[in-house]
Image: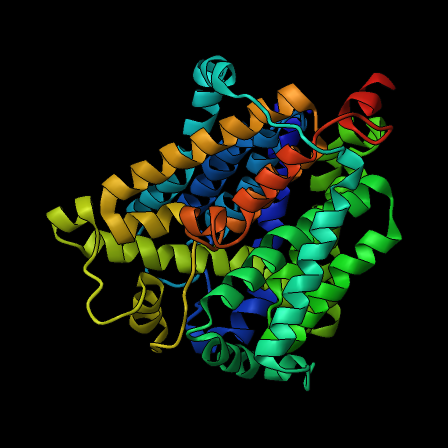
Length: 433
């Protein structure tokens, strides 16, 4: 897809996101500090520059795990700061440029590493293919079933499902899982890693049964723990699998994805304009377009206030259990607020510039390894894992996404169940172009 089309699509998305904020989200969320935005010349120039940089990072098509990783990273982490960096009224223009730089460099580093280092990484990658690929759904389904049993045993049977009790269930779940390390890991790995991977396979194989399995599990986790983002991840991965399974839609995946987002945002804008409220605006657009630049601005502001040595090595944790709670207490007024952001800014505050650079190197190396696995096996599941990592890293530390959220476990399973081919694999579909 041409650069000009990507730029126009991303610019349109940011304008729509800004409009939804101005008409609806700002007033609805003023109680947590969101302010009206004065759209002046410098704001417009920064919006264009930010969107242009996003277009340089957005892949033209999806041909490897790194492409899908960048697609989701740009859409979730990078893009929205250009339109909504003023929403919290914390950052100056110069500080917004700092935020843009910190968000741009990880993706730019990945593209550079892919261009100059991929051949060296590929030479050291040796896949381990022991079991037939068609059997991969078995261990994935078994893991979801086991995690469901563990969750019910530890947390009890679901007794609530309403949106109004989400945070109550979430706090109660934290208390119940305190000290239950194995149960916590099992639930996190399955809901964040395994369930979306099953959803991708459902879309890829056009399997309603697999989609039902993934959906049933995230519904259970929503009822027990009030987890909402896994449902969005399942929908995103199922749609991704469906679009990539056909050579026609795969070739135009980026264009279709951006067009779909533009259509959704247009519908949301029309709904809030005519009716004053939109469920999608409240639960999806707010989460993706508003919360990202909101919390990102908190992290950058805290980092800029640190002493020089702390900028290099990280902010002191003080009495908090994690830096996310420090941010929540400082900017949201509650030490119970777990203010998550993308893994790169989390590393910046936690371990300073040194940790930020380590996060960039670690993520780039991991994505290059995924690319190498995919090139040798042409297993579409590796592409799915790259995209899922791009989604998870938007609200988790990079190490948390790799380990606690089941990304490494997913890689191990896909690698082991890569033996043989079927009519569903990437090679067969690619040959039909």
